[in-house]
Length: 321
Image 1 (spheres, rainbow, N blue to C red):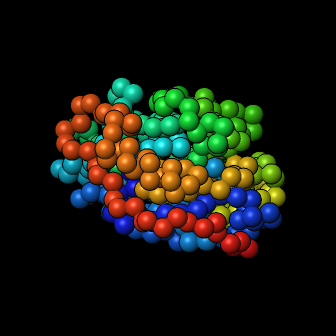
Image 2: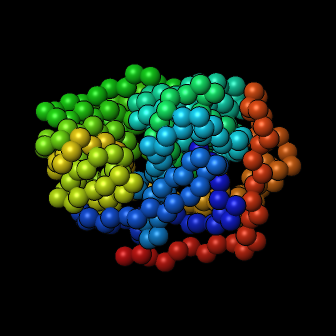
């Protein structure tokens, strides 16, 4: 999914100086952003005071939206650089097209993983004949310097490993959990897990104390380490945890996101992640004036123009805490 903000701002993210080295309970409030005519998202990352969780650099939660008789998601061709996109659905379908020739319909609890590397473009849309409800999350993973210029590619995994406990099913999106490993390609130590929790169930997830973590609430009502969570909220948990207590007040859907703190400082603007203002400027020019990002074939409509780029280079951020 694209960042469609026409006043996109430059952000400096990453660096261990912004990681909380101990367990915390920091509830993040989403920002509401319109995507086209019929889709509104709740943007949890980047967030004021909390830019990343491990290599996770962008989190949008959308739906459930009733799109019966509506076009649903319609995101025109747009570019990406220096990141991976993770498409994750609980309801509905999204048709993915990209400039390396991929054409795939992503369905609930199937992994759509696009690695932009040096440059890719793609579109996302609800198929013409689609389910009534659309509900999911779109996430970005920042690529480390050693891998951010890899050849662009797309992976689709319809079958993913699960870990189960009484009242809990955990589906591995990326990384590892309790001996299970996702088939999705990861370039940093990372984990992403979909959690289906039954009402009244209690469970404890094993965690890596060297990772920082957050939990996104997708549906229902649950308590995460004793903190009540409603859909569209995210709880930042810091580092230093070996397990995470969960309780379902009702049937609930959650996403656990975590990873080794991302050491490099990155510059994020619109749909690009780079290391300097100049790189971002060159990427924008490449999208608007050259064929650097390739062509998305088969999409019925124009591609998305880039917003204006602020002319002033960013300075590194000061420490948050």
